[in-house]
Image (cartoon, rainbow, N blue to C red):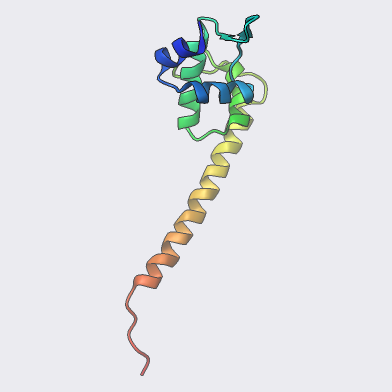
Length: 118
């Protein structure tokens, strides 16, 4: 299928599909006229990419994880190091959450009225 058809079937813009291809997340064959042709499996691949992006994974992590996904959910075939990779992503998220909570507490402290010193 051509990129326009893939875009229509997935709801993802052609520009974003080209970006996925540049990032090594999506594969296309090139016709002699330069048009991209995607296999029928591209629809499922794009849906998996979207789910993984929505989970907060970077395109670099998705590139590593994507070959180990089986379905749109996606379910994983536990390829080598995938569990460690996802555990590291969770640890990084937890660290970011802690940082954000500290920021929130600091900002809240700025808004708390203080009694004047006597």
